[in-house]
Length: 134
Image 1 (spheres, rainbow, N blue to C red):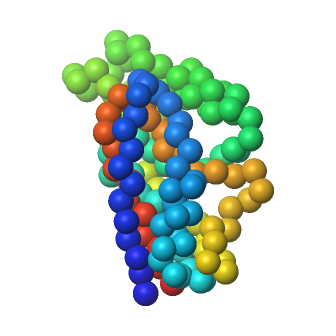
Image 2: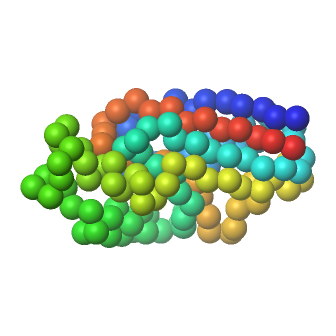
């Protein structure tokens, strides 16, 4: 048994992390899957999915700042001519999907964990595919 849904997500900044946990939880609840897996997939090459702390917003700022230091926007380093090579590299480093266990009909996230969409080339309209399998 599986259930799939799309999250439409407009972003508002050049780089940001958006908590999509509530939306994913709603999809898991609607799936009626009690035990299985939930996959969140980003089909964009300049956006990513990650799991991280949901309590202190400074964590998201720190992550974005660390990625900027590791993969700067300075275009003199890149050959990709569209001006967003840094966004492609950041997305490749973070990753395009996450898979989370579903237990008793709920996401088995840790106490302080949330699911984030990472925008590296916004603002844009993004789509995430959520698949719940049981």
